[in-house]
Length: 473
Ligand code: AMP
Ligand code: ZN
Image 1 (cartoon, rainbow, N blue to C red):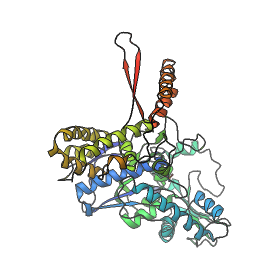
Image 2 (cartoon, helix red, strand yellow; image 1 turned 90 degrees about the vertical axis):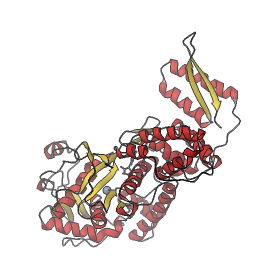
Image 3 (cartoon, rainbow, N blue to C red; image 1 turned 120 degrees about the vertical axis):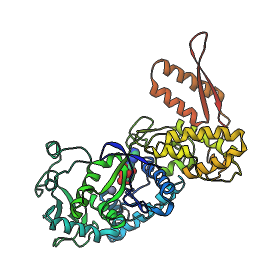
Image 4 (cartoon, helix red, strand yellow; image 1 turned 135 degrees about the horizontal axis):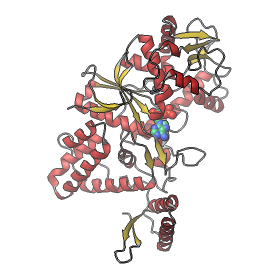
């Protein structure tokens, strides 16, 4: 079985050739834990869980090491901890805050059918390793000390910028941020910096007398090096991390260890947006995983974790994904059908080979799911096909034997107000006629949230669009 993955570094789909097939090693940048994780954060968690499951299937469950870190020190964490626990020692305060937030994160993602990674290291448990990297980089001339900071000397690395495809000259020319006077080059970045009053502080490396704290990028170099070694197979994260975070991780790790690569394959998931817009607090469309699972503020319903997972897997991981109520409604009805077909059925054998083959082609989940839908269709008629389908769904993390009622969490099939529905259907048709598709989509979602699904058809005589509706379940 060959596994092909799109590599941001080579900009092509390459065959995965693990350095050691008895220990395939993957590192994924995990969450910064200072608030509830949002649904965008759930994307890499699900995407790389699918890859982890595939790697375990291909190489053996004991032959894969998956590291997903927890970022438990940064500006936002420090500020939130100081605000929440003003009388506590800053180190204790960030620990308390990040422990609470990490526990919530684990609770949220467990519901999404995600396997725990092999190791989940915390940045603040690796301060010693980070300081050792700083020392090594200063010693070999790739970093310098200035005004109690340790800075990476970007021009000292010949091929800096290769991962993100930027040249140093371009980056320097485009550097609009005010450049700190102690930097030798505008692109030099912080490995270690002095802590301000009230911030968490550790003894500094490289002979610096004042106490300090690590920069962001150094933590992943330290944790990946400790748990996976100097060079490993796959490094992943969201597309926003390519520059500067991953570029700087590569620079630190390669220059500290004198290696030609940090990871062989770099994988990046596309971004998630909500109802066609960037998710942000100011737009009021910021949804947390917790809200989806336990609240009723997206489409007026709670959504079962499997529904969220299936909805996420409907789009290829490299494409942007538009998170809509409609998408969740569709995933829920598919899962209803699965529950109806597989009630009481035990898994038998391994996953369907075509599904495995689809995933082996750069994790093509839409193609894998269309195969699953075909299998579901035959399993409805043919009892003998059911145990195999159950095994395939187990493998994909999509179904754990839930009943239709369990999947229907928090959704009350209300007696709908038919006059209101008719009014909304008419308003939607009017919006479509006026080419206001944003409004017509919004109305469709409002109806979906009420459990109403729509079907548009052209009247063959008049050529007009006629919409019929029905209440789900
Ligand atoms: P953060 O907690 O911001 O450090 O992000 C944790 C992970 O989620 C990183 O791999 C990010 O790239 C990813 N991520 C953040 N926002 C989104 C989004 N809107 N869509 C997809 N991935 C995201
Ligand atoms: Zn990272």
